[in-house]
Length: 124
Image (cartoon, rainbow, N blue to C red; front, side, top):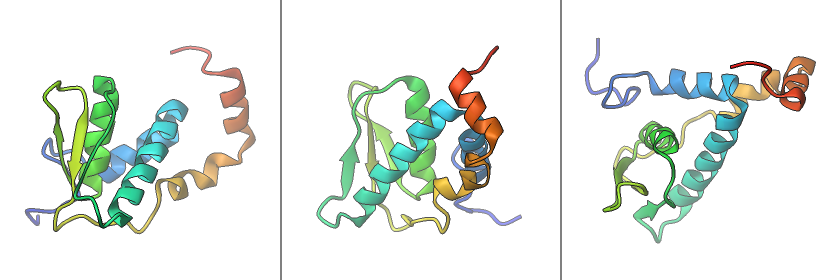
């Protein structure tokens, strides 16, 4: 095994697999992930700023943001309140070859998906 791979975060989970699974299985989280990706992409392309502070969010959304930031090769910390995440560009920061939307475009147009979204999940 190679050490120091950027494919996992500090907890050792496979970030890519986690994000793809979340995108595919959870329509609500999908919107959040696509939004975070968009903001991070804009941030990466903004050469005037070395760090970006996100608004305060729930612990679950912070976890998603930490993982997206790690996926893009960024440092990620919380501010003094512990509720807002600040991300920093690093020498490892990169734009992945595949956008999040590319992982879900196969299923986006299936009837099942649309029916599911319209009716909402019937049970937990």
